Image 1 (cartoon, rainbow, N blue to C red):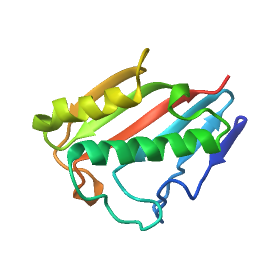
Image 2 (tube, helix red, strand yellow):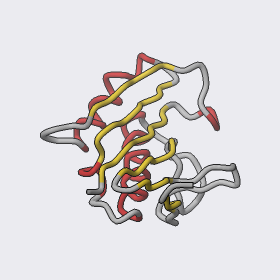
Image 3 (cartoon, rainbow, N blue to C red):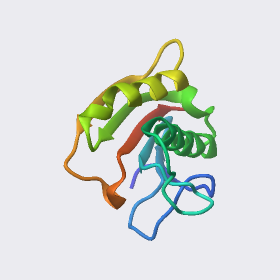
Length: 129
């Protein structure tokens, strides 16, 4: 395999499922999808979709930081998965607060169901050059 490194941190949720929290390939980091799960408790964060989106972004930032990056400021692409497109504006509000200025490229899709029946999940690509 090429020059890749698996990234793992206790500051983001982990499961026994067969995936890495992140994979660094050169200067590019691919961050797996995370739901609104608190890494300390392993439980879904209760509350508003904004609070849940914020927790997901904390999880993504933790993996970027563990890979040697500067948190969300190194993120260049995000995919947002929502279980209900009626949450779109509220997710956008929370998301936008974490990416002031020049936000990364992004896709948002409504999905039929997410693991753990969470309402929002995000994955990301970061550039660590």
